[in-house]
Length: 163
Ligand SMILES: Cc1cc2nc3c(=O)[nH]c(=O)nc-3n(C[C@H](O)[C@H](O)[C@H](O)COP(=O)(O)OP(=O)(O)OC[C@H]3O[C@@H](n4cnc5c(N)ncnc54)[C@H](O)[C@@H]3O)c2cc1C
Image 1 (cartoon, rainbow, N blue to C red):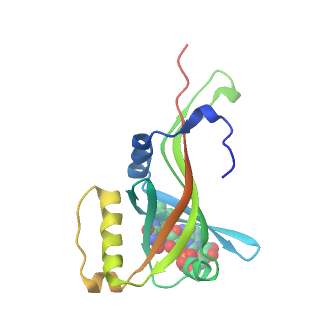
Image 2 (cartoon, rainbow, N blue to C red):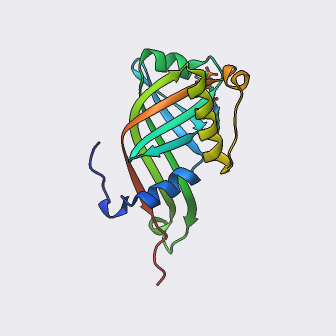
């Protein structure tokens, strides 16, 4: 991906990256619709194995995002947390704190029922911190999207130092 402006704000510590993945709860999934962009907010689960990030989404079994993934599986995503506006003496000194991750990858609509059940457990773990198990019939009624993340970056904007 392109180099980041404000390089000093880049986050490379994996523990900080995990904190963002655990906290954001919602990601914005960017899809390509012909010559247009389409962005859809979704809850997610994640797995991080040997530095390899995979995102797991679920939803209804039909709709625009599924049609677009079938036509073009290339996706981009963004998620953020730690949003806290701060004030300044002049308008230019106002701002907002954040931690965010952006990345790209390839989406796949999962059909294997065992992988779907695992994906739903990953999703619930990320969303709630709790372990849930799923039966075949629960997984059968939803669609599951797996995103193999090829690369991502993370960024943190802290609050300005006082004084
Ligand atoms: C915080 C948050 C979390 C969500 N989590 C999930 C999730 O985990 N799984 C999930 O499937 N969905 C989730 N949703 C709903 C999601 O954003 C979509 O509405 C839904 O997934 C349907 O997407 P679709 O592409 O199939 O749209 P379709 O139902 O095919 O809709 C077609 C059209 O409806 C409009 N539309 C669709 N969604 C929205 C929207 N959210 N807001 C405004 N207009 C819209 C757009 O114009 C779109 O072109 C979440 C929404 C929010 C705000």
